[in-house]
Length: 113
Image (cartoon, rainbow, N blue to C red):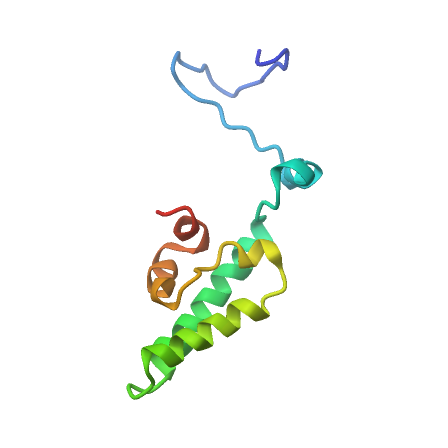
């Protein structure tokens, strides 16, 4: 029991093992007033797609003569135009971090991993 909530398992749980429980997205949404915005699966997928798309555009499609400053300005415009707050909060703040975010994904990058 955990806080008087029984758990049913499909196997014996050894001492020291952890149980992970999926409360569902509604749990976070119902508590947004005091938890703040928590990115959900759709937000994460959208952020990852934006990162992939703009990494391609800014690092592959642009010619070598385009400066890092121009790429940085373009990325800042992408961020400013994003209207979904939960998506915006997990996008890299700087163009210089786009490469790493493309490799690791939006969430891992936003958490510093």
